[in-house]
Amino acid sequence: MIRISDIQSADELLPARMLNEFVYCPRLFYLEHVDGLFAHNSDTLEGAARHSRVDAKSDALPTAQEAVQCESIHARSVTLSSEQYGLIAKLDLIEAEGDLATPVDYKRGAPKSLDDGSLGAWDPDRIQLCVQALVLRENGYRCDEGILFYWATRQRVRITIDDALVAETLAIVAAARRLMDARQIPAPLVNSPKCPRCSLVSICLPDETSHCRAYVACEQSEQTQPGGRWVQPLLFDVGYPAANSESIESAPVRQLITSRDERRPLYLNTQGNHVGISAQVLKIKEKDKLIQEVRLNDLCQVNIFGNIQLTTQAIGALMTADIPVVYFSYGGWFHGMTQSVGLKNILWRREQFRQADSNRFCLQLAKQLVKGKIRNQRTLLMRNHVEPPEQALQFLKALTIEVRRAESLAELLGVEGLAARVYFEHFNGMIKVGSDDDRPRQQNGKHEFRFDFERRNRRPPRDPINALLSLGYSLLAKDLTIAATSVGLDPFLGFYHQPRFGRPALALDLMEPFRPLIVDSAVLSAINQRMVTISDFVVVGDAVALTANGRKGFFRAYEQRMDQLVTHPLFGYRVSYRRLLEVQTRLLARQLMGEILEYPVFETR
Image 1 (cartoon, one colour):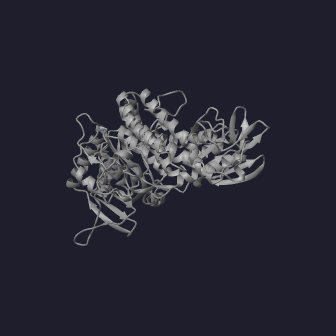
Image 2 (image 1 turned 90 degrees about the vertical axis):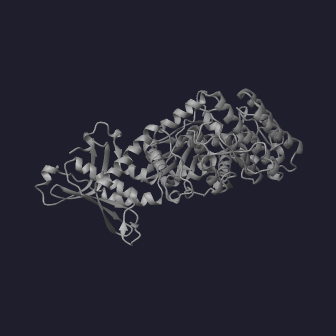
């Protein structure tokens, strides 16, 4: 008998479960088996819970020669492989009498109802069961039928393992291997009822990808046509031809989004605190006094500002729960993060590195990002300025045209800098304070604080608003670094921001259109809604910094902004900014892999 431990290169064997996924959806197979991506939903969690009972005990399966001497065998959770077919399968239950074995596979759902009213099996389940029969046969057992047990109705469906089913299974194995060798992700299903219940729908983005694949925004007519037009890709454009453009165009983008993530970031900024863990609960202490307890299940990330100690046990538990720990200086400078594993998706990163060497690609993407940033800055001024400056708005609009004409990244930087200067010249018009609590304050008789903004300054920020902006941009860079890492891209290799030691260039690229929408808006909310007041700032050397209470107030404003729902202008559904960062990062990965022709920058209306 061949067991998994006897196989030197188990990676070359194709798991039976993956063939089940291939029959269900080749794209799902590719994402799980080739790209190594997986995400749980309620169905998979329920299935895992049921299988945990089956897998609680693993039995030894005697050889076929030994089994002849046995009256009956019930072996659970047995892993067998087939070198002849290059297959491996984990069998939930094997019922055998002598050397005649019957695999029993447990399924969470209900059996298929056939036209005559009888019960049948779904195609993915039939193929998976046939693979189990093949590995049993190669290990010396006779296997003429298999059984599928469906938990939902608690019914058994018997499947005959005949030549036709074996031939169908082997054809699917060959097709799956061809797909693996091609290294080209299949196109998403179009308007398929399978997608809403797929656990990888938030990673696959089937409707969003289909919508973007053959769609290019009509730059010339977008002022009069909010939508766009369908175009035929050029000869050397990377991506699929728009063969199904009509069907895709007519199909609305469904909100195939998983339920909102209720987990929240944890910010720790009280210097000298000590963080340990007990029973999956973080214990935050000030000296020896317990001041807060936080369950790991409630967290999506932990942010450490300055001198705060985490025990090795706490870091280990956070890594096990796949919760990143992000480190900042006391002043808010983003240092880096600790994550559970390194970047996993080597194929995506390979394309990222290849495209980063293309000046044409870098310039094309950078133009999209800068244009989106300028448009969003203009929108923010129109929405929030006490008297929107018409001349500045027209100038910003004209700069979006100049962006298209830029012939180098250096030229593009000049246009972006000019837009930023105009935008920040009028930033003060969006600050609406005037109560006695916000009158100018003096510190040490030297510094007078006020919420007046003259110009952008940094490293260090020398006034309260610049201190808030710098801290907010660090938080946004952190969130997009996490998003890029979770998607499988290298956050330190960008296209607009060129590589520099310690700089998350890709995160900085992705955050350009979101700077005004998330950070600038959060700063305005924090000031205008008195979440941060003048008394929350202190002078540290040449810099102006937030006190611990002031930082806490700004974190609240930032997280409220991240949780705010916004309508995606291209897809039409509402999504939180927190989720939007991941969606946009995945769409960039789609462009890197050649699935879509152009990165759809998020622009609010």
